[in-house]
Image 1 (tube, rainbow, N blue to C red):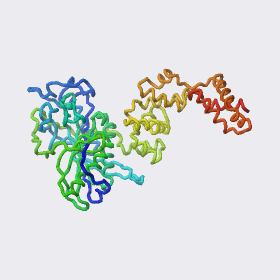
Image 2 (image 1 turned 90 degrees about the horizontal axis):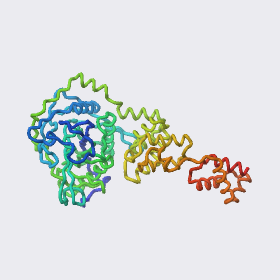
Image 3 (image 1 turned 90 degrees about the vertical axis):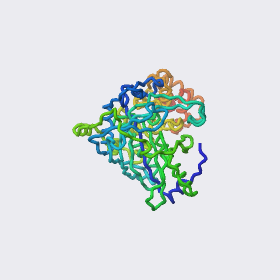
Image 4 (image 1 turned 60 degrees about the vertical axis):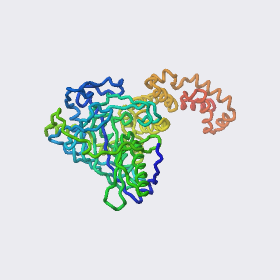
Length: 503
């Protein structure tokens, strides 16, 4: 996507230290928008969830969504922020075609939550785990923009497009923007820390129940601000802002790419331009967007149509009691309950399978069985298709249902994989797939006995070895029977019949 020259990351960090700032936008899962009663359902027909308020029509007055305020306070508390006793909204003025009002209702100098912190754990190259503290500058309320669809070009971007379509359904959906202070960590760990932080926020939002935090649907998006400073100095460089990065892996790749790009510019005697950048999933590169404005250029001023928000201390403390178990504490508890070693737990987290394993256990399986399926067969499917585990089309309840069929002796592990195929293909529940595809294990002694006889007749040399006491040779006959029965035979019963007939 770009011909920008790069300095290899490992070389760049020998001369420069990366300084990051991460801005994460979280779409709240409220039933209605931030300032009006329009629904927030994802995927609705374009421009069907709009009204005079979110379209910014003259005379339409906004009203603050109380549930969004509650969610904002809970997010702030979970990030150890101070909750404002009084705050207000502001108009952030700039031109975007997908902002129907031509300004965004946001918060500027008076956010609802500020001065917080959180901690993330990162697995280092040697397998050890290190904890990094991330300082939170603010978490403020605002509204989302609409969505532009650029048609006719090769990239889906405005450059080269024939025309653009606008969908205002998303305009006005409640957003919480979480902004860090500058993040300075050992240079080699910067990409991993950025990824771990966004992953941590995603887990926290889901635990709080305030958002589905699905990056693939844009309900959690990260802007990666990055600059370089010469190693050993304190003078910050000019930053770039890579916008709307929508996967954990991409956050890490964006940091690595920008470090290499900045280093190439600086090594060549140039100056880094303060600008926004587009991230390209295809190759992990970024390309220029627009020159980045400072806050003063947005011409913030107080929103005259909205009353200030002044949450009582009693309400804030009541909401504090609703906070879930902190993610780090939950990890330690689950590891102990499941009996996982450090490596098993690390791999489970790294695969994005922690919540899936937990839900599968709750649905009735053991911890090791749940881990076996999610980090084995299903993880391979995830890698092959490029989809996250959670997006494969199979639920923890389905996985537990497949295992229940195995435990009941109705299918075996080989047939279970066919059941997964059917469930993922939308053929129904595991039970329905087994019935529709005729996948139940054959345990009828008559049918199995006939198949064993045919295997013995076709393999007289093997049969003789078994008669001579070489019981291990039975595996060849068992395999022949299983092949004839398309994997639907009870292997244990087949073995018993082979040994009975040849004893």
